[in-house]
Length: 383
Ligand SMILES: NC(=O)c1ccc[n+]([C@@H]2O[C@H](COP(=O)([O-])OP(=O)(O)OC[C@H]3O[C@@H](n4cnc5c(N)ncnc54)[C@H](O)[C@@H]3O)[C@@H](O)[C@H]2O)c1
Ligand SMILES: [Zn+2]
Image (cartoon, rainbow, N blue to C red; front, side):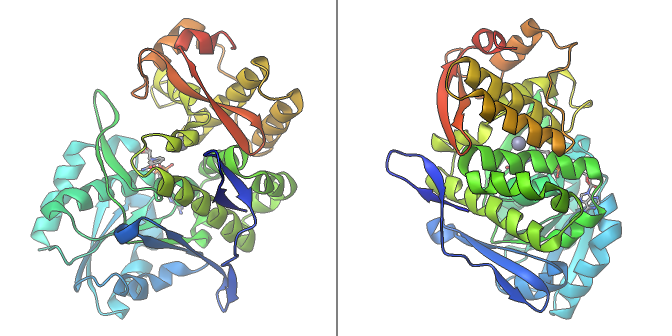
């Protein structure tokens, strides 16, 4: 189920050497994000939280380390991670930020810098993000900028952060003028993914993460898509081995895309499948009504419909995608109160627009995409 570079520029699924192994703690998968001198491993397994200390040793961090976490995750897992770090001879401090996207901003970044200075964190000290994408983005940007860069470790705890936000090196904070307007590309030294933490993740958050998982299947990996069609109920019930397999597959796919296009100049745009309309839906509903993955699910169902209308894919492909999204408990219809004019205007303000056109990701079949350059008006004509 891993991605493989093909002649002609596309990445398609193919049999790749399997690195999944069974050990005492269950399944374990290791993916290498291959970026030359900045390459790093992603370890996916069950119970990895207890290995954080031993694994951080591998990045040669000094004794002082800072763990940035959110209120809920800190309460659930903070002590376990701190104990693992102590056990490996570290002297960790934990910095807790209140939950919520509204705290991914410059004020909380300043708070974080203050705590890092107080704790005398230096260039040898690892900064560890323990939480969802909000914590990962904030901690990553702090790590990129504090003392011009300190070693960064991601321990993502939402499905979305495990398969998407923690891979690829995008970090940043929001500005009142827009989401993620201030940021940097900064790669972690290590990503540690414990799928067991997904047991405490609210069902709605799990489904939102599944939207990104389904996206990888649609754009790059028909075998992953079929696995989801067959075994989604097991995923929803938290089958740990299956989660290791699926999260590992997604990380491998994203790692391959990022290796091709680290700073998003070209091919990485394929990951925007479902995001053009999804972002517009999120913006028009003020980021309150839908979780990101839910808006992306609506955007993917729409992108399939647009692809079908423009004769890129058949009706069966559109139906398969809609069925899988619905099975995951995700929305697939554009809310009736969002009119075409407002949606077209929101698409036109997307920061990825060039000369009034966006690079819209269409599908040809499950596992194969193509780009079309369309204006907001041309896009909403297919609503
Ligand atoms: N850097 C990237 O490439 C990238 C990609 C996608 C999204 N993002 C960013 O990620 C953010 C969204 O991330 P998210 O969806 O993970 O949301 P989030 O970080 O807000 O987490 C969602 C909620 O889940 C809770 N939570 C997290 N892990 C839990 C667990 N194991 N058990 C119980 N509760 C848990 C958190 O406390 C939070 O309330 C956005 O800011 C988005 O911009 C970044
Ligand atoms: Zn997304």
